[in-house]
Length: 130
Image 1 (tube, rainbow, N blue to C red):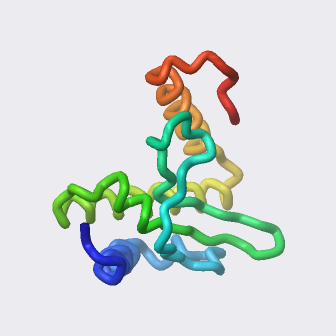
Image 2: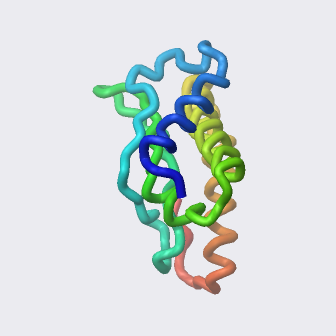
């Protein structure tokens, strides 16, 4: 796995690929944190949050990327494969941002479906959180 500094460079490169217009109203920018984040929906220690779109009426909008989660999930990937995952995650979080601005929630629905599939794979019988 690449170092935190190398990962930061990869994230910056992926961010520079995106059109400047996507950054409108993303006043908190893109933040890289060194830790991992276990998903609140994880049934085992096997579901990590790679990135989050965060919005608050007080603090505004930002995207947070968790280096430690990438390290746990993609630690054995090549640098090229890792860059693909960085791009995908960053674009996923930007889509949340754009959809919030547009009053849409298509990606939230897709994420809920993916969580349902995770629960099905685990044979979880309880309620699926929203």
